Length: 472
Image (cartoon, rainbow, N blue to C red; front, side, top):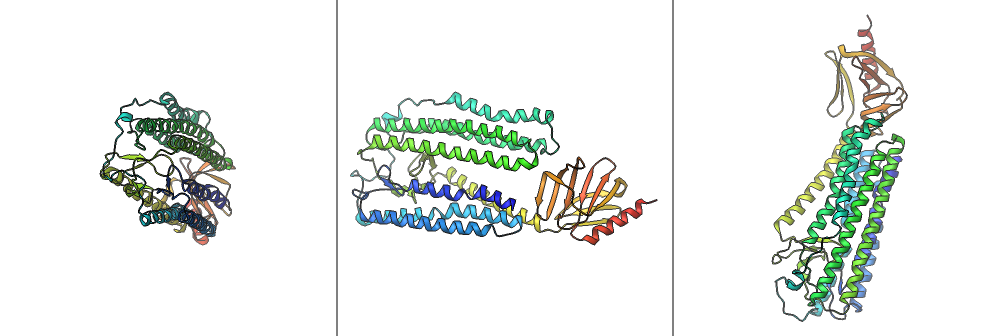
């Protein structure tokens, strides 16, 4: 039940978040809707009203379907099947909720073709115009010091943990390398924000109208708000990393809930920052553009209004038509192959993780004693203990109270490094909690093991045999 609550908290928010985002990006902004440049009079036309109404109807229907599917993913009793179903649902939801937007984009383009109306009166051309006046303007260097110190602030927990781990060591804490890897991963991910600002400063000024001053002012405002957003996210991620440092040293009882808590706070504040930045940029666009005509209609270069593909554009990144930020020019080989590689790695990683979890839970555990060697096998040999190294073996009819430090903990599997608060000792474990009894093995070097198989009699026979050969 606890795992289901955790999965609901961690994965279900994806559905309402995407739903709200899709409602926002579907609004008409700056003469465009659903990623299509609108023709004259289209905004208030009956056809566009029907397209908007159909879009919201489909979005509500798809969201309801995703909600019902989410409820179905909570039905499996096995942890591995539950996690696998939730991961598949997450990717499916992200993909399927964009289908109404893609359909609305196609309907809008079809209406535009039927009316054969062009938004601009200029001659069609495949060239990408550059506003020379705006391009030669000085590019401001924004928030560089704040970004630098924010990055330092984010990396500090990695150094602090190295000292703090030994000063305040707790037997239930994860190993040092796990703590360091976790904190370092978050810190390295934060470098994306200053790198994005570095790229943003060198980006060409977007040509939106024939008025150079408007192009320049819009570019400055957009760069300012995006740079400010990156600066705030850098410091926020740093605060999140310090929070992780704190949770890593909590008891196992509070660790998981504290981690979920700070993650939810981080996600919530990030969403607020994102929408605030997006809203500020859109407000400025409305003020400066007003009735100013756009320079040209480039719908043909936008796939579904989401992906940019233009072989004649030498830019690798362009401003998104919907939402906030930039997107890659898919006509550029380095962008195309990077996206393909990322998607392949993402899907392969998902299938590998799901396959590994299922293999872990459904592979039976066997315990055997052959050639003076006690062996525990899961889907591979986990532990091998020579008879001469065994100091004492105890048969336990019930599972002792233990907490995980590193490894796997499921309903029918516990494997890895655990800690016993009653015995106050570290244990290397591999057993099925549903199949007692268990063997508590102490080696002569002081290492303790808690082992078990999937057959009660098999475990009892091995314990009996070990008792006989140890008795003089």
